[in-house]
Amino acid sequence: MTMPDYEVEAAHYDSTRGGEPRARAAASAVERLLPPGPVLDVAVGTGIVAAAMTRQVIGVDLSLSMLGHATQRLPGRVAQADARRLPARSSSVSAVTAIWLLHLMPDSEAVLREVARVLRPGGVFVCTVDKRAAHRLAEGNIAMPGARDERARVESLGARYGLSVCGEGSFVGHGQDFEPVFPLLALTKG
Image (cartoon, rainbow, N blue to C red; front, top):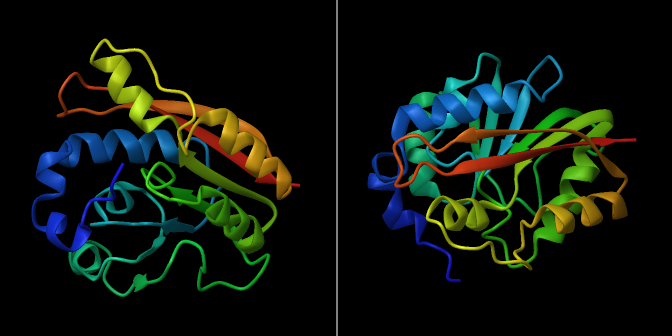
């Protein structure tokens, strides 16, 4: 699987991926799994999901084009950063989200290690898992095991860095073909 060129994709990203209805569904489901307080959103993209949240969100993304859109939605609360090297002190963040990221990473372990580093004890990480499987199942195809964001893999990698499952949820990909149901996994730092 090749990673999309988000410098090009940014211009039409939201309109081709469910827009506001999908963003509101994602934000609502994610917030149910988070503790109160601000959130660090890793791979904030255009900021559409973060802007739909009812709490303060600070977003980071590697793509300057995606951040150009996020800046409009989250003025003063976005920065360019790599998910594998977050601009936060160790044990300083109470909540981190990564929606539609791990399936793209050639090394999702590096992201989980970095999230575990910045989370404070008792902090929560919420991420999507099994993204490609959700699309395949919605289309009537069988799931493909071994994905970088496969739930069992994320749980295992999380455990390696002191993160344990504390919740799960899902949301419908409104506005997308077949309206896939995207699973969410919440992990807490012990």
